[in-house]
View (tube, rainbow, N blue to C red):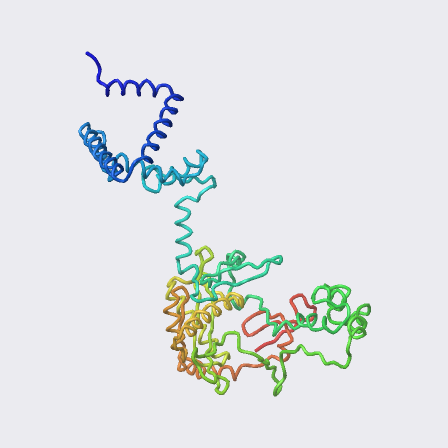
Length: 466
């Protein structure tokens, strides 16, 4: 059967497409021919041409639709041709490099959820969850430390020329090596050798004289080496040695920079035949009652409260103990207030440990100072936040709210008065020991008999009977 003209033209185009160069040349010539034809048309002919072209396109789309070649893809709002146009627009703005194109398309696909995002793998060693939980529990535990709120939680310190910030933390519990050096069998308190230095004034000499004497450093050992020839000899230390008796004059007096200047280092003065300490600043364990929103504070006097602090080590507790803070409105730091506070602390310890057999009192200013400083900071931060603290009772209430690890007790004035009335007559009847303040060593020999000397190995020993 002979082919129609349309079929022969189609076969011709198919064979021509197989020959790329000839097909491109054919399309170019056909395009030029149609362009010349359109330019030679008048207005009426152009309208007829466009109308026939629209009819042809409509017939072609209906034919493709019948063949199901231009249907919309599932879950897509694009047709075949509109999708191709959208893809063409996207490809137009992509980089020219194919590797970069793949990276961009892959990243877009990951963001849209088409591809699975890669999981970042760290090569560094990670802490286990158990370690992280232990660290978090440690810092969240208020019995270990407590962080104050506010803008001054960090302290800036220079280390090797670099400013480093450290976080401020208030430690409630004191862990020291002091308990490791305690005797297993502690002797009774009256049999213990006592150190009764009124104050260690020898440490003040080098500090003050180093500023006024040429070549003298602020060092006690170096000062002693210049003053005496042998520190173990009593004659040298008592300035009765023939060799080093004039060292003070040669090494100190003859090298003074300004001999008219009066150098003072005394912290005690004699009033009515008694040694009285001069206090130039606030007492170490006093707290000043102050207000955050005060007006003209310089015109008014301020009230003080007294804080008596102590720390108790418990046997068999592994070095742990209990901190005590006794607060009162009385600022008299006399023997009656000390006895009252010690009696309260002993009763508290007995309540905590009913089977207590032995109690030893050891003076440790560093431990007690830390307890007092912690209580002061806790209350002062609350005052800065606007809380009212007008008496010792308010101080104790604030401490009870902020800490459970330090035992804070309010001491009433009536308790101090009772102690004074009971012991005042006893202290008045006690026999005074002449020159006791100059002695540094006291030992109990028998009942009502003591032996004292300038120091433990002194040749001159004195015995006193009450």
